[in-house]
Length: 79
Image (tube, rainbow, N blue to C red):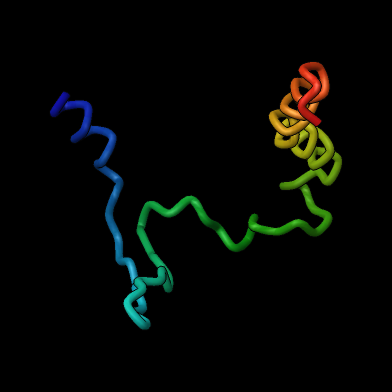
């Protein structure tokens, strides 16, 4: 277990900025040399990285639990 944790946490490093406000802690930014964010590919414009037609499938899959729940409610007369 220790070896697993050490391996999976090897690239967990960086800096986190927090804001303290009226008893709350708010994340205000983070940086890491192993960050997966790349501003050159983080776009929804027309390019070779993101195909806008993918969103339809994502929306369908993301909404699937809600659709199944609604069908179960209707089937069991819980509307």
